[in-house]
Picture (cartoon, helix red, strand yellow):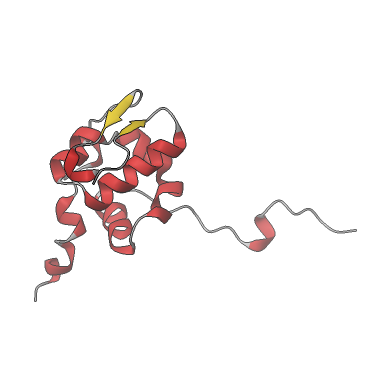
Length: 118
């Protein structure tokens, strides 16, 4: 098994570059039938909660064409800290490696806004 074998699953469904994602930044996105299974189909991408739900569905189950058409590169980058926890470890790693999305920096306990005592 070659080195690229582990990169073909989730990463193989992603576009080549983050900038290839040309979905809308605002407005309502209607998911195609193959992604809905009778559930909610309309998502307002101007609102965070519906957008995170839409993006997690498309990244987890979508085809490459779905991603390019439905996801917006800027929104994905902006939402990545919240969105990444909704995805499988494989998809999270694939997005971070292939699309250059970054995990949020881990803050030390002392850097969480606690002032000096006393």
